[in-house]
Image (cartoon, rainbow, N blue to C red; front, side, top):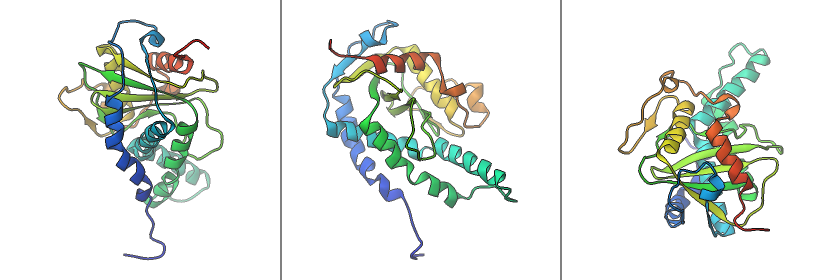
Length: 246
């Protein structure tokens, strides 16, 4: 029913929704060396040139996936209900409208962070497929704040392409966009993170993943402190990566 107080933040996502086809086409054009079973991720990364506009495209599309994830809505609900309970409200349950109000500004907040700082890594897989779920591995805050550091996220874009992002307190500066091909066991680790952070739904193209006990609990779980050894090593090497000697 049209009224002055009607509102929606879906229009905020018009830009990333328009950009996703272009993003996919661009990502598929990037170069990445053949996968080698090496522990040194930096050696396996291939630098790619990119423009400021391409960085913004990647930032807004990834931000939209994080902000609209049901896992993010769950975190907002938990935080909101915690503070409503602390305030002594008889019913601390957060309404959908209240959750949406808290969610509405996250897209711009996330996009601005990723556009201006941090490092990206494009991950390709040739044999094993990446899966999708109603949760995303990330530690982005659900409260807009001027202080946000040590951020990290991995979003699966296609069954063959994922994007990793890290923004530690300090990191190496480099103008290139690195890309890397994943071994089968590494794809399995990324898929595991999706199953841990997801609650009700998991999607796959043709390769059904093994379902761990974590997903069967039907909760939006997370790694303790969002730490997973393989992912931590990968993101550390991304942060330190330099495509040339300075």
